[in-house]
Length: 182
Image 1: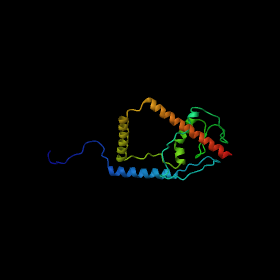
Image 2: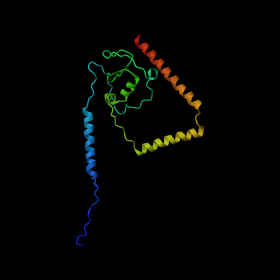
Image 3: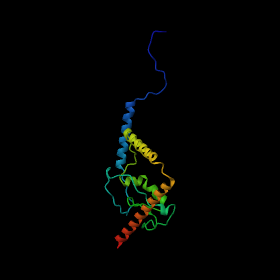
Image 4: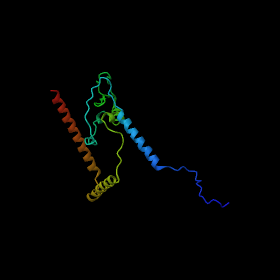
């Protein structure tokens, strides 16, 4: 019985070839990239769309609020043929939306992002970026501890100041629109 001293692999579990699956993943990623490049989003017939050239250098995170608070949760009648009414019309895609929730869904959706030339894929953060962000947050907490916690009344005052700034910006925009019309 002891004639063969060979080891027998009887573990019954599947062994994965990491190099093979890495190559498959890379091929699938390239195929998805090609598919994404091939797709083009066309505006509805008859829509006038002004497109801006975008590059990664010009894409920044929005640092302002969309002014939707005044009409939150409201619905309005919009003439779909002319786009006239109190709804929302997307300048990039020419889509007419009837309420604020639909507009917010649209500006954060695939159709809008593709019209702007953006990819919906999230950039992976490196370890150094994460560590830097932790350091920034740690410094903020240390500053708050050194100066004392921000009181509720101070936070309310800061929020009121922000609202006043937004109101001023709205008024300036209205003045500019009136000047442009005349």
